[in-house]
Image 1 (spheres, rainbow, N blue to C red):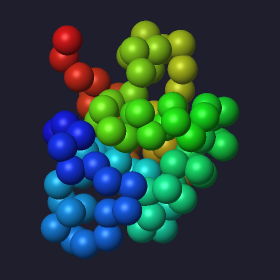
Image 2 (tube, one colour):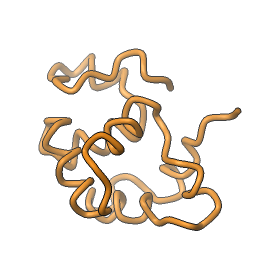
Image 3 (cartoon, rainbow, N blue to C red):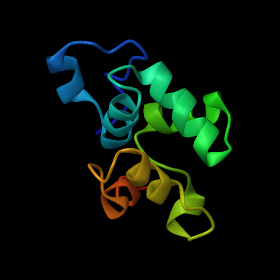
Length: 96
């Protein structure tokens, strides 16, 4: 999925269904609020709010995730209580 329906204030079930996997994970981590989830994720992975917002809007994690330089997918999976699997989060990488 792409960023077409990513909104920091997503609230309805139908809007949630339109979110990409990264956005869904962040939404759930934030207790149903994307801005809260972004704050939690950014604090846990040591990145800025803007960096995590970029991942949410892009629908994928940075290139460094695929090369093994970073472990953001593992941390997001952990923060979600395992609801979102590390491999699934990594596989959201956009095809160039």
